[in-house]
Image (tube, rainbow, N blue to C red; front, side):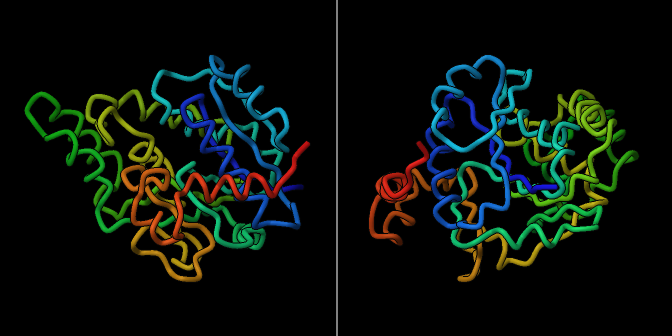
Length: 260
C-alpha cells in the first residue's frame, strides 16, 4: 500500500499549494507517495484546472464556509486506501527528503505532531473568556476531556491510516458543533482545538529535527512550518535568510520541474 501527502487548497491557497507541490517534488526523487489535494465542492472545477498538469489526486468535499474545517476531512475513510499519511499546511517548506518519515508510523496507532508549550484549554479560553454565558460549555469540556494536557499543533501531522475509523469524522463534527460557541481559535474558530480533543490520547511528540517551527527549528529539520502569522510569503526575515523573496525562490523550483 502506498503512502500519501495531503494538502488543502481552496482558490485562496491554490497558489501556495502549487509552490509546496513543486517544493516536495524538488526534494523527493523516489516518489514513494501520492500527493492528494483536498478542496471544497464550490472551488473544485477551478482548482482542478489550476492543477491539471500536476501529478496530484484532487479530493473534493462538501465543506462549511471556514477553510479551516477542510482539515477535518484528512481523517475521512477515503484515506484508508493509503497506509501512512503526512498532512502539510501550505505555509510549510520541505528542506530534505521526507520519504523516510513514513517509516515512523508503520504498525502504530499513534499520530506524530509537534507539541506546544501550553495546554489544550488555552486553545479555547485564550480566545473565548470563561464568562457566565458559556460556563456550561467549559464545565462540560472539563468533564469530558483531559484539556489540561499539552496541546499539539495541527500544521504538520504524520499518522498511520489505522487511526481512522467509520466514527472518526462523526466524532470530529460532534465536538465541532458541541463546542463551536467557545472555539474562537485564530479568530473565527479553528480546527486545532477540535482535532486535539479527538486525538489527544493517540498523539505522540515528534523530534524537532523532523518538524521545525519558525525561529525554533533544528538545522537538520526536514520540514519547516511557519504558522500563519509568519507565513513565508510575507515573512521578511525568511526572505533575508534565503537572500531572495520567497515567491522568487519558489518560482525557481517551479521552473526546474516540468509536470507536463
